[in-house]
Every structure is written in C-alpha cells, then in structure tokens.
Length: 523
Ligand SMILES: *Cc1c(COP(=O)(O)O)cnc(C)c1O
Image 1 (tube, helix red, strand yellow):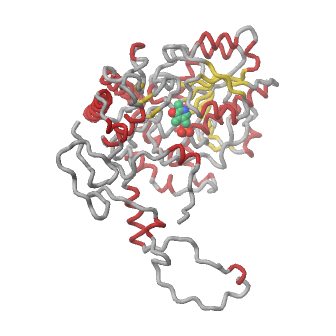
Image 2 (spheres, protein in one colour):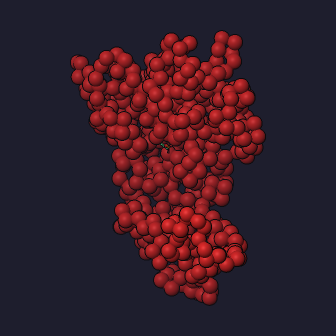
Image 3 (cartoon, rainbow, N blue to C red):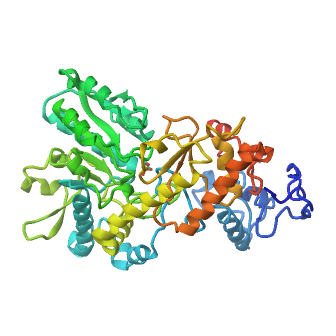
C-alpha cells in the first residue's frame, strides 16, 4: 500500500514513507476537507448578526425583576456565518446517499425517492392528529393498507402500528404478552433471551419488569434447542412468560429450529416474541406466523426502506398472533364488515367486546410519514418484488462472505450460506491488529465501518450487511478495500494502528466521551 503522505496537513501525522510530502495550508483546511471549530469558538465576543436600536434605559413596567444581569451566552454570528458553520459540519457526515453503509443488523439500504415524493403529498404531510377523523379517511385507509400488508407478509392476525422504533415495538410485544399472562390469572416473571440477542432484547424484558435468563448458543451460532427444552421440561417452564428470539439471528443465520422452539414454549404456556429487525432477509419468503411466532416488531426504517434519521423518527409496528391480537394497544385501525377502515379509540371499545387493549404506546397513531414511505415501497415492489429484495440481500451478503473468507476468519462459513449479513472476526489478522483497526482503516478507504464487536457470541466480531441496494461493482470496491486492509494487517503495517489518517479527527477516546460527556461549552 502506498498511502499518500499527509505530514504537512496534520503535524501529529507520521510519514508512511511516500515520496513527496503534501504542502501545509495556512487555514488547516485541505481542499474541500474543511476544519470546523465549535460555533462558540467561531463567535467574536459580543458579536451579533443584527443591528438593533439602543434599548431604552427604562425597563418595561412590572418586568424589572426579570431583566438579565448578564448577556446570554450565545455565539454572536451573522446569518451567513451560521449557515456556513452548519453546512460545513453537515459535510462531515457520512450518509447512505454518499456511499455504502455496511452496518450489520441495521439494514442501511437506499431510501427510494418515490417514497419521499408520496410522503410529501399534502394529504399525508399536512394533516394533524387532532383533526376530525371524517376529514382524513384517505390517511386512515393508507394506515389500514399498511396494516394489511404487514399482516399478510408475516401471517399474523393483528398489528399495533404506534411503536416508534424497534425497541419500542419490543416493549409493546412484551406488554401484550404480560397482559395475556395476567388475563389467564398467572404469574410468569421470566423471559428467556439467547446470548446472541441484540442488547435491546434483555433491556426491554428488564424494563417491562421481567427477569431475564440467558439461553446458550450452539457451536454453529444458533439457539441451543436442547438447553431451551430442558429449561421448559416437566413443568419447569411454569414461570416463563416467553422467549425473545431473533430470526434470522445476529450471526446472520436462520434459526432452523424455530417451529420446535415455538412448540416447546407454547407447550410450557409461554409466548414467542421474535425480534424482526432482520426481516429483510426473509420478507416475501417466510411468514413468521407459520413458525409459531406470537409477536414480532418490524423496523420500517430497515426492511421497508424508510430513513434511519439520526436516531429518529423510526417506526416499529408489532404484528400479533391471534393469541395476542386482542391486547393490541390503542389506537388501532380496524376494517368494518364493508371493508371501510376506522380508527379505534377508547370510546369505540364498547362496540368491540373482544378487544382488551393493554394501554397505549404513544399519544397518537404513530409516524405517518414512515407509514406512507413503507406503503409506497410495498406497493412499488409488489409481493414478488419484496421476495426479490430478500433474495438479493442474501445473495449480496454471501458474495461478501465468499469473497473475504480466505483473508478474514469467518466463524460460521462452513455451516453453509449466510442470510443477509456476513460475520467475520479479527482472529487471523496478525499480532495486535484488532477489529477496531480494520474499522478505522475502512474510514480512510471512504466507507462507513461495519458493525464491530457485535454479536458478543464471537470475539472481535465484524458484522457486514451489504443489503440488496449495492451493485456488484459497489460490492467489489468494498471487498477490494477489505482485502487491502487485511493484507496490511497481516504485513504488520503500523499505520493501521493509527488509522484513520484522512478524517478531521482521529481516534477519539470513545469511553471517556461516553462516561464523561461534556455537553455544555465552558470556554
Ligand atoms: C435495530 C435492531 C433493534 C432495535 O431497533 P431500533 O429501531 O433501533 O430501536 C433490535 N434488534 C435488532 C436485531 C436490531 O438490528
């Protein structure tokens, strides 16, 4: 590797031995790679972007005790300075619209612009949740169509649309399970969670008031069915409200024993929660209801291509089996016998004797913009198109797995094809080189890193999910960067240990930042 020498740009950077050093710049910027101070550091003391007449000395009658003693600690900048500051900052973001985002488990796929177009139609974008229902029949019908699609694709009897994200959907599913257990007059304090689960699963179970017990994984990365059935056998499962299983799981593998897992849990009187964040791998191919699942959240911002925007807004509808559908939280949509969609609220329950909602997850119905985007995506793909989404997502992940397994350790590669994501570890990278070094090296290569150190069941995990929206040429570029990084690692290239070299910041102390965040500027 002949990396360009950037010693002139950053004084702390060491030379990689390239021939001609790049010239230093007086500004610290490097072409279009701009340095950006904090807005408080930009602001001249006492500066302002507006001209106001001198304030009259006499305070407004009755307000004198509210007068400021000191000026507000706001940066004093003009409008163009503010606009440039935020625009320069925005250019330091990496985004799915700039390049691949191979974060395993996150399904960072392209957000089709058709969805955006439809979501911006005034009839969807400009309505208000307090508006009289009679003025929004079209929006209610769109919500009902989304509900119909979700139930058909998953083979389930009901759906709660209001949860705002996957983790919120997990909570919704567990609260429905708790309501069902209580309706039977039982006390079941335990939820079983496999060791490979996403961190939100045990966190949700604990938050919902359950005691979490771990189920071990087998050597081939799947739930240990024997351990699970032993835990539930001979009446020992009487304290178990349910299990939370991710399928496909976080090792990128399909849980083949799912029907047997569900049967064992049902026989013990429990319910099966499926973490459906990885539905992208099986949408249109497998209906979780057929595998015995009772509740499953679907991340519209993953499988159904709505944007993952900086932590929100997401949307995590929960589909429910006929054993749990009655407990769906308010509000929900329901079609009457003529097929007309209605919103059901508290005051409508008297005409629905079967409904026993456990409460509500949110004030209103959910994220309308996300519903419209997801429905536009479903309608534009059709059932066959959605099946092809899953096929292509799995094909792309297997292409990555087979193209890298000779240079990176792939723990489950011998177990057959993977699903939508390929799992590697840092086992064979050579002395002292870790997953973190490869992730930081990828930033220099112009890619967002993969998911690192998750799942926890393998050491030094690198979880790569290319999704179906990357082209073969795009995958080849990524693979070639990964192969180059693996080769540098094995050759003992010391510059990998200090990557990234081409970013405005290098290796920040993430632990310190998380433990002692400095959220207020102190001058
Ligand atoms: C993304 C994800 C979640 C959580 O979903 P959010 O929408 O981020 O709350 C849960 N489980 C798995 C496996 C995931 O990938």
